[in-house]
Image (cartoon, rainbow, N blue to C red; front, top):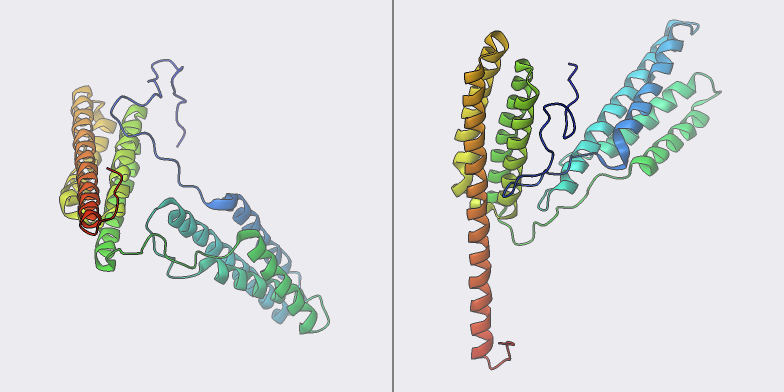
Length: 298
């Protein structure tokens, strides 16, 4: 859907500066190594066997070309998903390694696809296999391996982190549904408000991920409140698209502002609690050092 350009210096545009007390915009989650562009090139290669398949002499050659196209396309999809998983792993302080090594599987599929495509024009499978091995190796060089280790998991309760992961995954679905529904309203300011709320909510996600013990205190904001905001967004978008009711728009913006302030206030409370826990641990350690007759630097 086309959107009117708007920004700080556009007519009626709002300043891009972050208001005082607000959460600064989170950096966009981008796959490393500019994976989208490279994956698009890789996917384009899969078109070549499809184009030439129907010009091959005989059904066997045509079937092999089509199979090569399918395997190459599958490898490209696996690589794209692997880059997304790697970006999510790199963006979080505490993260488990991807359960499925998609980029490695994508390299393997690329090698098989190239081998199938090359076998038609070469005498024997050995030269084709060499091409396949080289293609798979180049894929690994270009895109790298999948993350193979957990990050920041030392001393963290795995049961709690699993609960946090499930809760945040559900909350992300609510945010995605809000961002999708508000497009129907065709109101740029509404889209910006929803995007800003999403940034604030994701800042709380990171806080809860850093200390899974905060999940209980934040559960309402991650579940009930975001679910209600999603339902309100769906109803607002349908109503505003049909009637352009300005009063409904004002009330909806007020709801978003109140929810955003509530999320930020709860996040600050969680951070204060984390700092208090740290201070207690430091004091306990200092007391033990004093009892053992060691200098503490006080």
